[in-house]
Image 1 (tube, rainbow, N blue to C red):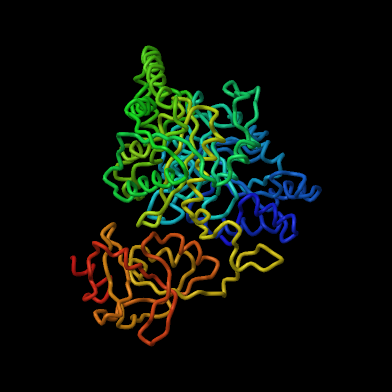
Image 2: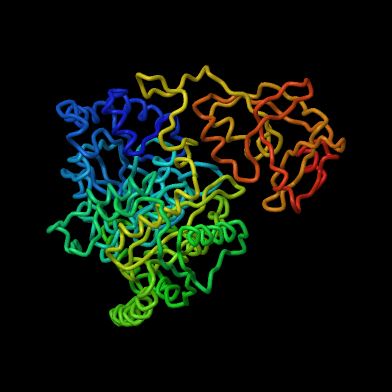
Length: 605
C-alpha cells in the first residue's frame, strides 16, 4: 500500500538503486497475503516460483527492459506457463506448458507475474461474485461488488499489490471493475492483443484488457502488447493503429479543439450521485476544449441487447462444452443453457440486424472524436446482487455490452467518488484503432479529476513513510490518531474500514461545544461542522489509532464534501478527524440536538 507503482516512478526507483525487484516483489507478496480477505487471487506464486523471473532481471539493467521488475497480475482465464488455469472452475483446471502470447510479451519486456486472479466463472458476469474462490470485494468498501468478470485483476491493482493487470473484456469485464476501483480500464480494438492462451468466452468477441493506474501506463502497455499473432485467427494489425508516439505527442494538458457525443437517452437507475458525476465530466471535457454534440443512443442500446438476448450467447455454450453442468455455478449454468434455444437461423438474423445497427452507429461517430457514456448506471452491494443476480448484472452492462459487437475501442476512466466511498467513472469510446487517441482524451479528463492512485491513497510520485534506501512498508508501530463521528464509530456500518486496516479504538470522548452535526441530503451521511456562533454543542466522537501506512487509503475513501481536518475535543486538544465544509450542508438535516449519529439513528426506529 505504501508503494507508488506507476511505471515511470518504478523505473526511476530501480535506476537510482533505491530498491531492487526482489525486495519489492517480496514486500508486495506479503501485502497480497495480508489482504487475502478481498479474494483477489486464485493462485499467488511462491518465492521459489518467482525466483526464475528475478534471476533473469539480475543479469540485466533497468534501462535494458521497458518493464524491468514491474509486478503484474493475470486473470485466471489467461495462461501462465506451469501455473494452473481454472477460469474459476476447479473441475475445468489445467496446467499449460506455455504462457499466453500477451503474457510472453510482458515477461520478455521484464514484467514479473505475481499470480492468477479471481473472476466470475468462465468470465460470465460483470459483478465479481460468481466464483467458488470467494466473492471479489470492492477495494474501497467491502460491502460493495468489485465488478467483474475481471474482479481479482482490478482489486490487486487497486490495492497496490501490482502495477497493472491483465483482464479480459467481452461484455465490459475490463471496464466495470475499473470504474468501481478507481482504475484506468482500456478495452482495445478487437484483435490488437492476441487471445492465444486465453480461455474463450465468446471467441469472436473476446479481448484481453488492461487495468492500469494511469492512461500513460495503459498506453505504454498497449504499445508493448499490440503485436500480430499468426496463431490467433482473430489477430489483426493495421498501419492506421495510433501507436505510443501518438499518445506522447498528445499527452500534455494544453487546450485543444475536439468534439464529443453525449447520448440523448441516459439511465442512471435513479442514482443522482452517478448522474452528477457524469454531468461534471461533461463540464470538464468542455473546459479542456471539447465541443459537445447530442447523439441518438437507441441504436447502441439495441445492439447491446443482442449480446445476451441474441445468438452470441451460443459462443459461451461452445466454450464450455467439455465442462460438466454440475461443475458450474447455478447462475452461470442458467445463462449458458439459454443458448440451447438458439438456432442457425437466429444466428444469421442476429448478424443481419447487427450489420444494420453498426451502419447507423458508425454514422453517429463519423464527425466526432468520441462519445462519453457512464461506464455503469449505478452501483450495487454484494447483497443486492445476491437478491437479483441476473437482472442487476444486466443493468451493469447497459453501456458496455455493445462495444465488441460494434467493433469499437473504449477507455474507462474514473472521475470521482460516491457517498458509499467507492469510485465511479465514465467511458470514452470510438471506432476501431482509435485506442491511443482515446487514451489521450481520457488522460486529460483523468488528470483534471486529480484522483489518488487507485485505493492506495497516494498521489503519483508520493510514497509516505519510506526511507531513502528501501520500498518496505511502513512499520506498524507508527500510528496516526483520527477522530470519527458517524458510520465509522464502533458498531456502525463502516467501522470495518478502520478495523480491516489494523485500527484500534483509543478513546471515547466528545468535541468541544463549538460543533453542529448534520445529515447530508445524499445517502444520509453524517457531517461535522464547526460553529463558533454559540449555537453548537458537544458531539460524541471516538479517537481511533490507525497504522500510518494505511492512513492514505482510508482518507481516499472519503467522498466530498466530507474531508480530513482538525477537530477540537472537549479537553481543548486538536486532533485529525472528519470535518465538512460549510458549503456542503446546504439542504442537510441538522441533528445536533441528538448529540451523536447513533442517537439519531435510534430515534428513527
